Length: 491
Image 1 (cartoon, one colour):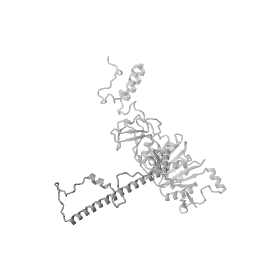
Image 2 (tube, rainbow, N blue to C red):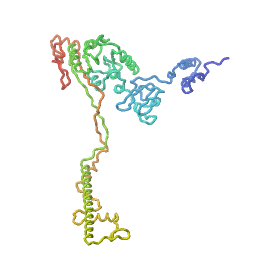
Image 3 (spheres, one colour):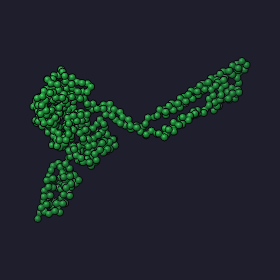
Image 4 (cartoon, one colour):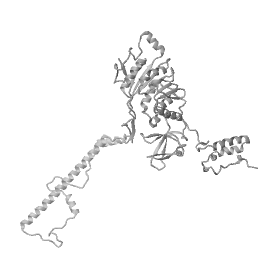
């Protein structure tokens, strides 16, 4: 009688996997539970096991968890998660945790498997000891700094200002024309949440494909609807639906009428146009006036971050003054010693010259002693020379002594020292310094409001003008910018 096939517990030897990597060993607990269960349950579990073992890729097994999206609140890093690797302030990069891969940088080598199970925000040392990195949880702000650039993007200063002025909040429905690299899309998706919706449009097909992959991988496919479309010619896919419109286009004035069609008519709605040139702003202002928008304003946002460091406290002025006084005293003492030494050497030369003159007057030749020296003289040692230098020099008022000058300390100095000791400054103080370079680019944000249809009808019937307009058709020539407030004033 043949042995039942379901009693086989070992994988075939022909499979080229070792014991630790083959899926059967990862499913060992499931198999043993199947053997102990009734026959019907065992057959069901066994079929599940065979289906898993028959897969070709080793990455598909029950032991690997499903990758979490960007908005996960898990504390620890899991396999397949997107993390932000903080190398330096200027070098930040995204990383998808994939076992078997490595991250190589000038700060060392890091295996992805070493990051699994590590809490977000941890400081990870390299395997070769060259440095360390920080592993951070992805946020829209960090994604803006780390994303791969496909176009010029919006940074934090502009994004925060736009979201605030467009009154975007949880549940809002927003249109974005010009998806680009998806920097603004991530921030809006986080703000509106699952109860809101974002319609994003991009005319470049390759950028649409890449952005759709990122939105799906980050868990945003239910919040964002991405469409490949030229909105300047074809308009938007929704009408009388959205609360706000953001236009990041080369010619936003061509999409103003389409934006008016997409905005709701039962409440006040808002629009923002992003333009890098003032000429674009002027044409956009004219188009907004012609379309009936009100409260038209323009802003340029600039940000200047500061770095705060803890440094040792500055030396008090009184202490610096005392050090200067001591330094001057030591310098004066050294000068007097040099003067005294010069005068002593001069006196010795004059004395030796006088003795030679007296010897020449007597006419007697000097007699050498047995050691080859002059009679009556012997070689002087260094100690005797030093002793002579310390003697008083006749006719001179300066006396040189090898004693250190100790300045007298007054009562006021002692009192000040005691006060400083009692009120000792902190060990470190905080100082700030502005960054020399900030990420960003020149941009102008033009905002406008669209009043509800009922209000517009009442204004038309009464003949009054809405706030921000003065009637008539605007042109580029009669619109000027106020440099003081950044507001576009139409006359």
